[in-house]
Length: 422
Ligand code: NAD
Image (cartoon, rainbow, N blue to C red):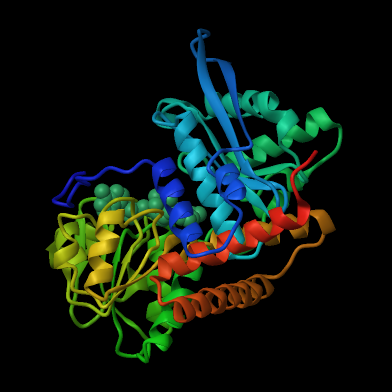
């Protein structure tokens, strides 16, 4: 990290976190232990070798994975990442997270995650295309519109998904847009997909503020990260009347106590790391986390609220925009301090929800307007919020536990209804 953002003192692997959350939620529910045992493990993990020809004519060999966790509620769904630290266990853990995320949103999907252990910054566009096409070929038998539907993640983007869709379609002999989501709209991508995770963070923040009887007008918000999630959430909340007092990039944070004109600051996509360039007053990312605001939205990276700084968090409400921004020790400290934390699997689930809309549009060969996408997203987010709120109130648990309880009960009920075969 390039500024004083506190590094995690309790690094947690995605797999450990996913398993711990499973046990936590299971302890509140009367479900068959055999089902819990099954859910601790992925259904299948595919490991493939991906050789590609580099631009200089040499050949490099990379390792790719696709971990498929649970498909009791429908085909597997989850991102594909290109990152040097992609491992089998990371894919398994993140695949499990996707199972919970899809279930809390009541989407007819199970969880998966995959990727290639490669540094995409060291690949030319041509090399990235060859890697994607060869990886698509290696996993072709295990993906498909009714089997497993990949999407973009770290190091991959709509163009990567277009190549993957093309490679798959060429081999199948028919154009199959519904094999991946997060594609460019011209080849079957959905309007509103890019903004969806940030939009869902904003919708859930609005719901949570209403729940705690505070009007968005006059609510102060600090957002860490000004990328796809952070900038879209900040701009919508600003538009809906909240006062966004702080936003940040990797180099530090802009702070304006009277409120930032969020539309005037370029997002990471529009101009990388521009926040600090446009700021009069720069504070550190760690100072941003400690600001005395009504709502704190960590939307940059994981493990930023830790044992080391949880005691100093001054916000009344934390809405997780990033995946896993709060370590489990920090979650306990915040719960003891009565600071509500709305979990990632609910707050940023707009991405996978609009991916589901994209899949529906592709299957029906009929695209939706942006207005329809946003309306339906709002409806889905509200339904998920209501389900989680009900558990939160009835069981007197944290918001995170409530979300996992909703997810796990749906998955367990589906397992019970389908039974164990043979
Ligand atoms: P992005 O690359 O668009 O933006 C990341 C932002 O974080 C940038 O403003 C960058 O400057 C800032 N940043 C990077 N390192 C930082 C650091 N050390 N300290 C402070 N700020 C830093 O990324 P994104 O797509 O907005 O994703 C952000 C988080 O949200 C990730 O945890 C991601 O997994 C999660 N998420 C993304 C999506 C999605 O579809 N984009 C969906 C769900 C969850």
